Length: 295
Image (cartoon, rainbow, N blue to C red; front, top):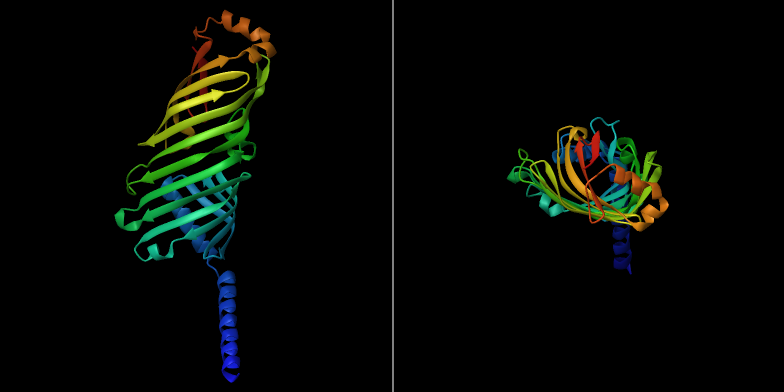
């Protein structure tokens, strides 16, 4: 009985020490230092990117919980490239001792579930590997689209993004498979009497090499129109000045002509090139000032 009481006493002391330690870690946690570290890691992906968060706290199982984290462009007051409501980050503790930073993350952003990983090897010239998966991201809640695009794009966005970089002195490579469902493009001002187009589904397969994004495959299907897209985007230090060199096709369907019967005659009078019901177009200029032209 005496031994049992003694063991219970030491167990109580141990639990007390652990709880006090956890409380001290929670309240004395160097959140600013961690935020600076994350900011530095984000800048490795692109020098124009930065990071800030409303709150960073330790979490169990061992990791970090980030509330209202934001990846921004330029200054901290600049436009948000990506925002998360909640993000849980779980590092691989054992790899830290070998100069490697490896972590898994999961959370919510734009009413979507996201997850992914990031791996950084300091011994190999700061090589970087990262991946991101997301499902049903609400484009209507994505602020940068409303700030940068003249027209409003809505829908649910799903896909995966992979990014790798050989060293701190080389540009990165990557690929992305993206899908937009229930999409709609709402024009700022009606175009030929058309206020919006139902896109329904858009599939994009893209590849990044040497700061050049190539659209390998791009397709659009909908009740009113089908289309395709190909070409490239040459990235610039200022993302807004990235050069566009895109071309594609648009195929208005019977439902489109039923809703807008005057468009058929208008397209005929414009003498635009048409093949099997498809019209051809190009998009040039920059990301902030694109130029659309029918051929």
